[in-house]
Length: 151
Image (cartoon, rainbow, N blue to C red; front, side, top):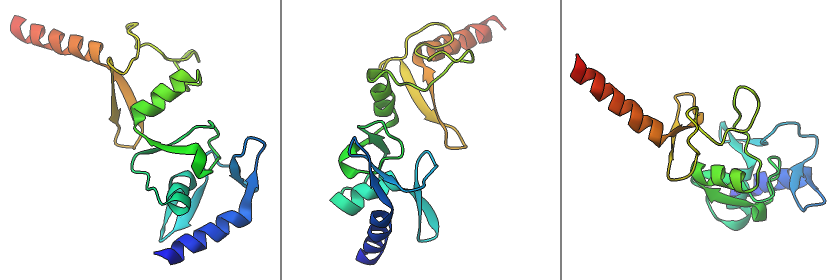
């Protein structure tokens, strides 16, 4: 177990660049989220550095306190669910959820605000996480029942 940790740690340390905000980034890296090849598959560096440097395994999403996607400083990373990531984005006013017109998406198509109480997250087959409005889902289900009764 220690062999792969020492190997990855030495590779990362050799490529580490520290920014003015104490973010750790890889030298000459152009990818949004840096990856490393380990045991025959790619791993997101921000997820495994928390385990390598602090012994804490991240089971959900690796969220960044610094909002720097390329950062892999374990002090800047914390474990969170998709709803935590969404709420963090709203709180910091940096949500990337956009409507077709390019404006930020804080409401569903019917105008209901996305809040933790009115939002449900789901994972598509391609792994993408989307959200839906619970109020609209309830209304759609009600309309389906009404149509069934009329027929």
